[in-house]
Length: 406
Figure (cartoon, rainbow, N blue to C red):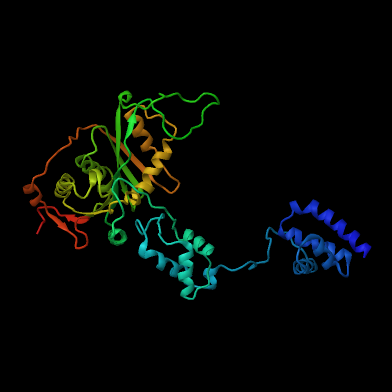
């Protein structure tokens, strides 16, 4: 007994020294070698001293008996628990079927959202007969390209009762356009920025003790002007054009930015386009109530000779707009910690925005004047080739070229 205690103390001392530098295979073989050296009862003694299971030590002794070969492999081929999706074929498809009906955003996007929790999804799958935990649901959702997002309130108000149905409607329509190789764009105005010697959120590398100096206060009177970035994001091609205005964020400016995107990027990318699908917020310069927005879109449809379909996100959901997560957040990241001293600085910083996923951005200044308070008469509205969709026609509608209007 005293011999065993002494041996155990020696093994513990040696194991404490070598264990930190050994991987799983190394520890297994070291324990097996110690067990062989002790002889009868070695497995039990080494297991007690190291905490390594006896079966693991026996496996190590078998490896030694068969001959140890130099290899980077820690476990034998096929070792480890098999993936649930291989043990239960169709599990991923069943999970996506549960999530897909309430998916937000474009269905082909690498970033999608779901309003169901992992626990609820796991419980629903278990009721269908699948064996799965909430942790595994989370892993599979990430593999499928989903991310759980929180809702945010904004100026547009509270949630609309048909919010989810409108999301589904937008997804289905976007999917049809993408499958038929017709352009789908997401549009919006980024937050206006004061142009001048002002602080910009974020940090950038500088020599220690030598930060770039800007004004203490961000008073509008000290500004050289304002920058109004209006973005047009192409969902299929992961590229965008941003027009940086300096006058007013009006519907005329919004449609002028879309026209510029078509001229600079869309026309060459979609030479056979007969339709254009635009997703936009419910308010602002591209709001569904704006008569000027619809009038200018009608003029664009006439000039391009294509049908323009528009779908607005419901009030209170502007942050779900694709452009927010696929363009604007990267622009903000790119100019963090840099003072926006001139309009040209804003344009250059936006135009140099890139991502590892392949996003490419073009930016152009638009210093034309866009007056506010423009009125559109009932006669002008009656002359539009405006065709509301059957579902929420105020949010979903089509503007046809008037020479093709029936």
